[in-house]
Length: 298
Image (cartoon, rainbow, N blue to C red; front, side):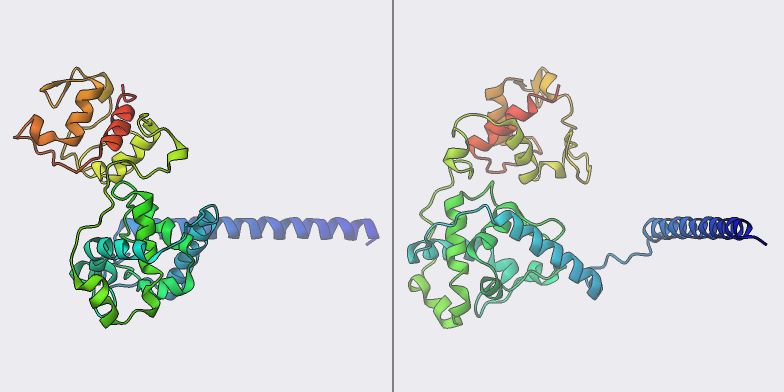
């Protein structure tokens, strides 16, 4: 056998090996896909809250969470955090955060205990995260954790108040926490009257349909309505909102105008006392943004 014949023979053998390897890889990919589909479709995955993620899955998810927050927090410039801000933050924290995260000497309530993954101890968080990395998840929330976005409830100033308090927690004893502010339960002095977007970002009174779409999700409207462009449980408790911009009436009682939609979003039970639509404490600005988005759904 001459050299050319040997080379041709080697080439044929190599091609056969490549074909067999390719077929084996394709079969493996198909098998994995079928296995994964079956794992999900036939309910093999246990969704019990007590069945924790495996260590590799938890590590990967936690790494993704940390890197995601860190990258987005790089663009945030924290203000100077003062004791007065921390006191305001304490008052908000006691009303909205203790239930899930606890506090020095104060345990989580039943909701916080039952969440998966368990909400972190924020005293530890303040040891490992800077102020911007604490601010971002409070404002934007975190998918698949139960951590909500607070940007439609609190202004940026209020969120910084919470951050100021959290940054003090690592050095705070249970006795310190109990005696902060003289142990008084007061209302925070900062009032939530406008959207939390910073003033330079947009004029305060100009409706923003893109932010309105986000607000419809932030106020959990998706829990009852199908809303184009958003993903949710599709419970159909309320009517689908597709085409609402072209409807003549709102809830069958109000002419479908921008101002009437704002009124409906803010005070539905005043418009119709028998409606199942709850009052969601929607701010004027958020209602205007939401109404401007709903106008686009024709």
